Length: 417
Image (cartoon, rainbow, N blue to C red):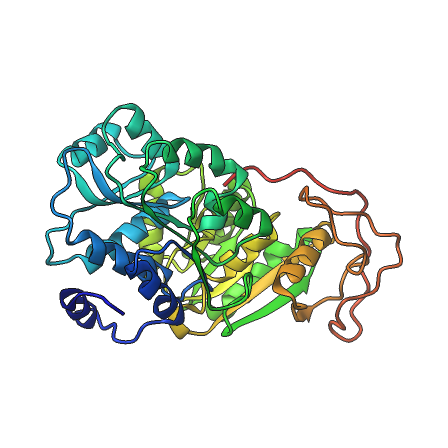
C-alpha cells in the first residue's frame, strides 16, 4: 500500500500482517495525498487507517520548529484522544517522531512545556487545543495533516464552533481525513467545509452494527430496570460488562447500587476528574472492575477488547449513539451481546434507533409498549404521542401482560455527558 519498509517491519512486530477493509481502502488514497472520508463499523481499525499514512508521510519532513505541529488529530473525548495517542506511539516506536496528547483536566503549564520543542503528531480535544493556541503555546501554521476522528460528533453543533476556530489557524493547503462509524446527512454536508474533493471509503452501511453483536431488547417498567440488570449481570460475573446511562447523577447512583449488590463496579462521566476516569478505565481494562457504568463519554472509540456485554440501561437521545455504544463489544472479530432496556417513555428513542439500524431489535422479554408503530418522532429528541392504537412490535414472551404507555410527550434532553 505504499508504506515504508520500516513501518511494515514495525507492524509485523506488533503482530499486524493483514489490513482490515477500512485500512486497505483508505491507506492508498491517504498515501497519495488525497483527502479521505472513511466510514466503517467500530472496532475495525480506523485509528491505524489514518495513523499509518500520517506516520509514513511525516517521517520524511524533518524536525518541526519550536511550538509547531506537523500533524493534528482531533477527538471528541479525553479517553479517545489518549487511546489514539497510545496507538500512534506504538506505531512510531523506534523512530524519532514525537507524539503528544493534550486534553482537559490536566495542567496547562505542563502541556505547554511539552509542546515547546515542537511535536510531529499532536492528538487533542478541541477545547484544550484552543486554550493552548490562545496562550501561544502551540502554532498550527506548519500543520500539513488534519484528522477528525469520530467525525460525526466533531462536526456536531456542539463542536462546530470550536472546530471552525481551530481551522482558522491551519494552512489552507493540507491533507484532511475524516473517520466515523456514522455520518448523518447534516454532518456530511458540513464536512465539505473541511475536505477538498475527498475519496469516500465506505466498507459498511453507515449505522450498521458489527455482525457478531447479538442484540436484544427488554420491554420493562422504569422502576424494574435495576432489578433486571442485577439479575442479568449475575449470570456472567466473570465477564466485562459496560452499562450506559444518560445522566451523570443517574450513572453514579446506579454504580453505587451495583456495588452494594456485590459487583466490582466503577463509573466514568463528566463529574469525574480525569484522574478518576483514567483509574476507572484502567481497572476495567485489567479486570479488577468487571462492570463499568458510563454516560456517552465512553460511547465512542474506546477499545477494550474483553468487553463481552453492553447494556443500554437507558436508551440514548441521539440514535446514532446506540451504534457507537454497542460497538464497544465484539471488537476485532470477537463476539458480544448488546442488551437494551426500553421503558414506556423510551418508545420514541427505540423507534429512532431501529430506523438507523434498518432492523427490528429482537425482543428478549415483555411485549412492546403501545405506540411503537406510530409515526417517527421529530428531531428534537422527544417522541410523538400515540393514539392508543399502536400494535406490539414483537411477540415477546407468551402470556406476558400488555403494558400501556405512561402519559406525557417528549421529555427534555439529558444533561451532557
